[in-house]
Amino acid sequence: MATDKEHITLMFNDIAPTYDKLNHILSLNVDKSWRRKAGRHVKKAVTDLEKPLILDVACGTADSTVQLAKSIENADIRAIDISDGMLEIGKEKVAKLGLQDRISFSNSCAESIDFQDNTFDSVFVAFGVRNFSDREQGLKDILRVLKPSGTLLVLELSEPQNVIIRWFYNLYFRNILPIIGKRVSGNAEAYRYLQKTVEKFPMPKEFIAMLQSCGYQEIKHKALTFGLCRIYQAKKI
View 1 (tube, rainbow, N blue to C red):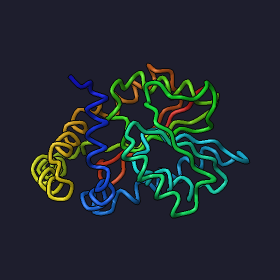
View 2: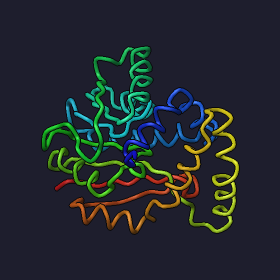
View 3: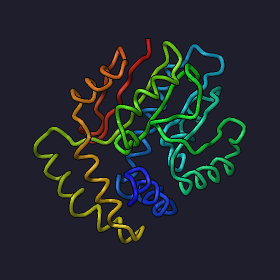
Protein backbone atom coordinates (compact mmCIF):
# COMPACT_ATOMS: atom_id res chain seq x y z
CA MET A 1 0.00 0.00 0.00
CA ALA A 2 1.34 3.44 -0.96
CA THR A 3 2.46 5.81 1.78
CA ASP A 4 1.09 9.35 1.99
CA LYS A 5 4.29 10.63 0.40
CA GLU A 6 4.07 8.12 -2.47
CA HIS A 7 0.40 8.93 -3.04
CA ILE A 8 1.10 12.67 -3.13
CA THR A 9 4.03 12.14 -5.52
CA LEU A 10 1.96 10.07 -7.93
CA MET A 11 -0.91 12.56 -7.80
CA PHE A 12 1.31 15.55 -8.60
CA ASN A 13 3.10 13.63 -11.35
CA ASP A 14 -0.32 12.98 -12.89
CA ILE A 15 -1.51 16.61 -12.86
CA ALA A 16 1.87 18.20 -13.66
CA PRO A 17 1.13 18.90 -17.37
CA THR A 18 -1.97 20.99 -16.53
CA TYR A 19 -0.91 22.29 -13.11
CA ASP A 20 0.04 25.83 -14.15
CA LYS A 21 -3.02 26.31 -16.34
CA LEU A 22 -5.35 25.16 -13.59
CA ASN A 23 -3.68 27.30 -10.91
CA HIS A 24 -4.26 30.41 -12.99
CA ILE A 25 -7.83 29.46 -13.95
CA LEU A 26 -8.90 28.46 -10.45
CA SER A 27 -7.41 31.55 -8.78
CA LEU A 28 -8.46 33.93 -11.58
CA ASN A 29 -4.72 34.69 -11.95
CA VAL A 30 -4.57 36.10 -8.41
CA ASP A 31 -1.92 33.50 -7.56
CA LYS A 32 0.53 35.49 -9.70
CA SER A 33 0.14 38.58 -7.53
CA TRP A 34 0.51 36.47 -4.38
CA ARG A 35 3.82 35.14 -5.67
CA ARG A 36 5.03 38.64 -6.57
CA LYS A 37 4.20 39.91 -3.08
CA ALA A 38 5.95 36.94 -1.48
CA GLY A 39 8.97 37.53 -3.73
CA ARG A 40 9.20 41.11 -2.45
CA HIS A 41 9.18 39.83 1.14
CA VAL A 42 12.03 37.42 0.38
CA LYS A 43 13.94 40.21 -1.38
CA LYS A 44 13.60 42.45 1.67
CA ALA A 45 14.86 39.65 3.92
CA VAL A 46 18.09 39.25 1.92
CA THR A 47 18.51 42.83 0.71
CA ASP A 48 21.87 43.37 2.45
CA LEU A 49 23.51 40.25 0.96
CA GLU A 50 25.72 40.41 -2.11
CA LYS A 51 24.72 36.98 -3.45
CA PRO A 52 22.00 35.36 -1.30
CA LEU A 53 21.51 31.61 -1.49
CA ILE A 54 17.80 30.76 -1.44
CA LEU A 55 16.01 27.41 -1.24
CA ASP A 56 12.54 26.95 -2.77
CA VAL A 57 10.92 23.95 -1.07
CA ALA A 58 8.09 22.07 -2.82
CA CYS A 59 8.82 24.18 -5.88
CA GLY A 60 6.36 22.37 -8.14
CA THR A 61 6.61 23.61 -11.73
CA ALA A 62 8.86 26.50 -10.62
CA ASP A 63 6.43 29.40 -11.00
CA SER A 64 7.52 30.65 -7.58
CA THR A 65 11.15 29.83 -8.28
CA VAL A 66 11.11 31.95 -11.42
CA GLN A 67 9.39 34.77 -9.55
CA LEU A 68 12.13 34.68 -6.92
CA ALA A 69 14.77 34.91 -9.64
CA LYS A 70 12.98 37.89 -11.19
CA SER A 71 12.50 39.64 -7.86
CA ILE A 72 16.04 39.04 -6.58
CA GLU A 73 18.40 39.33 -9.53
CA ASN A 74 21.55 38.66 -7.49
CA ALA A 75 20.21 35.46 -5.89
CA ASP A 76 21.43 31.91 -6.39
CA ILE A 77 18.43 29.57 -6.06
CA ARG A 78 18.05 25.87 -5.32
CA ALA A 79 14.64 24.30 -5.89
CA ILE A 80 13.44 20.94 -4.56
CA ASP A 81 10.30 18.84 -4.97
CA ILE A 82 9.29 15.18 -4.63
CA SER A 83 7.53 15.06 -8.01
CA ASP A 84 9.78 14.38 -11.00
CA GLY A 85 6.89 15.35 -13.27
CA MET A 86 6.72 18.80 -11.71
CA LEU A 87 10.50 19.19 -11.73
CA GLU A 88 10.76 18.37 -15.44
CA ILE A 89 8.26 21.09 -16.31
CA GLY A 90 10.10 23.48 -14.01
CA LYS A 91 13.41 22.73 -15.70
CA GLU A 92 11.91 23.35 -19.14
CA LYS A 93 10.44 26.65 -17.96
CA VAL A 94 13.74 27.83 -16.50
CA ALA A 95 15.64 26.80 -19.65
CA LYS A 96 13.28 28.78 -21.89
CA LEU A 97 13.88 31.86 -19.72
CA GLY A 98 17.64 31.35 -19.72
CA LEU A 99 17.86 31.11 -15.93
CA GLN A 100 19.79 27.82 -15.69
CA ASP A 101 22.87 29.58 -14.32
CA ARG A 102 20.89 30.89 -11.34
CA ILE A 103 18.40 28.08 -10.64
CA SER A 104 19.15 24.38 -10.07
CA PHE A 105 16.75 21.55 -9.24
CA SER A 106 16.83 18.32 -7.25
CA ASN A 107 14.36 15.72 -6.02
CA SER A 108 14.20 16.05 -2.25
CA CYS A 109 11.47 16.14 0.38
CA ALA A 110 11.00 18.80 3.04
CA GLU A 111 11.29 16.29 5.87
CA SER A 112 14.82 15.28 4.87
CA ILE A 113 16.37 18.08 2.82
CA ASP A 114 19.50 17.02 0.97
CA PHE A 115 21.63 20.01 2.02
CA GLN A 116 23.96 20.63 4.93
CA ASP A 117 23.13 22.55 8.10
CA ASN A 118 23.25 26.37 7.97
CA THR A 119 23.35 26.57 4.16
CA PHE A 120 20.66 29.04 3.07
CA ASP A 121 20.06 32.73 3.68
CA SER A 122 16.34 32.27 3.08
CA VAL A 123 13.91 29.41 2.47
CA PHE A 124 10.64 29.89 0.61
CA VAL A 125 7.65 27.53 0.48
CA ALA A 126 4.71 28.43 -1.77
CA PHE A 127 1.54 26.37 -1.36
CA GLY A 128 3.57 23.40 -0.17
CA VAL A 129 3.54 23.20 3.63
CA ARG A 130 0.06 21.70 3.64
CA ASN A 131 1.41 18.82 1.49
CA PHE A 132 4.26 17.89 3.84
CA SER A 133 3.81 14.28 4.97
CA ASP A 134 5.09 15.38 8.41
CA ARG A 135 4.55 19.13 8.79
CA GLU A 136 6.55 19.64 11.98
CA GLN A 137 9.49 17.56 10.75
CA GLY A 138 9.50 19.53 7.50
CA LEU A 139 9.59 22.85 9.34
CA LYS A 140 12.36 21.58 11.62
CA ASP A 141 14.49 20.43 8.70
CA ILE A 142 14.01 23.79 6.98
CA LEU A 143 15.24 25.41 10.19
CA ARG A 144 18.27 23.11 10.10
CA VAL A 145 19.36 24.22 6.62
CA LEU A 146 18.76 27.91 7.33
CA LYS A 147 21.75 30.00 8.36
CA PRO A 148 21.54 31.82 11.71
CA SER A 149 19.50 35.00 11.10
CA GLY A 150 18.06 33.32 7.99
CA THR A 151 14.40 33.83 7.12
CA LEU A 152 11.60 31.40 6.28
CA LEU A 153 8.78 32.71 4.08
CA VAL A 154 5.65 30.59 3.71
CA LEU A 155 2.91 31.43 1.19
CA GLU A 156 -0.16 29.31 1.84
CA LEU A 157 -3.84 29.12 1.03
CA SER A 158 -6.23 29.55 3.95
CA GLU A 159 -9.89 29.64 4.76
CA PRO A 160 -11.14 33.24 5.05
CA GLN A 161 -12.43 34.16 8.50
CA ASN A 162 -15.25 36.41 7.27
CA VAL A 163 -18.43 34.30 7.46
CA ILE A 164 -19.93 35.48 4.16
CA ILE A 165 -16.71 35.16 2.18
CA ARG A 166 -16.07 31.74 3.73
CA TRP A 167 -19.52 30.52 2.58
CA PHE A 168 -18.77 31.40 -1.05
CA TYR A 169 -15.25 30.05 -0.67
CA ASN A 170 -16.49 26.68 0.58
CA LEU A 171 -19.12 26.51 -2.17
CA TYR A 172 -16.41 27.07 -4.78
CA PHE A 173 -13.77 24.77 -3.29
CA ARG A 174 -16.08 21.88 -2.45
CA ASN A 175 -18.35 21.87 -5.49
CA ILE A 176 -16.91 23.84 -8.41
CA LEU A 177 -13.14 23.38 -8.14
CA PRO A 178 -13.18 19.53 -8.46
CA ILE A 179 -15.37 19.76 -11.58
CA ILE A 180 -13.03 22.24 -13.29
CA GLY A 181 -10.04 20.22 -12.12
CA LYS A 182 -11.43 17.04 -13.66
CA ARG A 183 -12.27 18.70 -16.98
CA VAL A 184 -8.84 20.27 -17.39
CA SER A 185 -6.59 17.64 -15.79
CA GLY A 186 -8.75 14.52 -15.80
CA ASN A 187 -8.14 14.14 -12.06
CA ALA A 188 -10.97 15.40 -9.86
CA GLU A 189 -9.53 13.64 -6.81
CA ALA A 190 -6.44 15.83 -6.86
CA TYR A 191 -8.57 18.94 -6.46
CA ARG A 192 -10.72 17.35 -3.76
CA TYR A 193 -7.42 16.68 -2.04
CA LEU A 194 -6.52 20.36 -2.43
CA GLN A 195 -9.76 21.42 -0.78
CA LYS A 196 -9.25 18.97 2.10
CA THR A 197 -5.66 20.07 2.75
CA VAL A 198 -6.67 23.74 2.89
CA GLU A 199 -9.51 22.95 5.31
CA LYS A 200 -7.16 20.95 7.55
CA PHE A 201 -4.36 23.50 7.52
CA PRO A 202 -3.91 25.20 10.91
CA MET A 203 -5.45 28.60 11.47
CA PRO A 204 -2.93 31.47 11.85
CA LYS A 205 -2.60 31.26 15.64
CA GLU A 206 -2.09 27.48 15.48
CA PHE A 207 0.46 27.67 12.67
CA ILE A 208 2.39 30.43 14.43
CA ALA A 209 2.44 28.27 17.57
CA MET A 210 3.73 25.36 15.49
CA LEU A 211 6.52 27.53 14.06
CA GLN A 212 7.45 28.59 17.59
CA SER A 213 7.51 24.99 18.83
CA CYS A 214 9.84 24.09 15.92
CA GLY A 215 12.30 26.78 17.02
CA TYR A 216 11.45 29.80 14.86
CA GLN A 217 11.39 33.33 16.27
CA GLU A 218 10.21 36.80 15.24
CA ILE A 219 7.14 35.29 13.58
CA LYS A 220 4.58 37.42 11.78
CA HIS A 221 1.94 36.92 9.14
CA LYS A 222 -0.14 38.88 6.66
CA ALA A 223 -3.51 38.04 5.08
CA LEU A 224 -3.92 38.48 1.33
CA THR A 225 -7.17 38.83 -0.68
CA PHE A 226 -9.65 38.67 2.22
CA GLY A 227 -7.65 35.89 3.91
CA LEU A 228 -7.73 33.48 0.95
CA CYS A 229 -3.95 33.34 1.19
CA ARG A 230 -1.41 34.25 3.87
CA ILE A 231 2.29 35.04 4.07
CA TYR A 232 4.12 33.82 7.17
CA GLN A 233 7.61 35.06 8.00
CA ALA A 234 9.92 33.64 10.67
CA LYS A 235 13.61 33.75 11.56
CA LYS A 236 16.27 31.40 12.79
CA ILE A 237 18.15 33.08 15.62
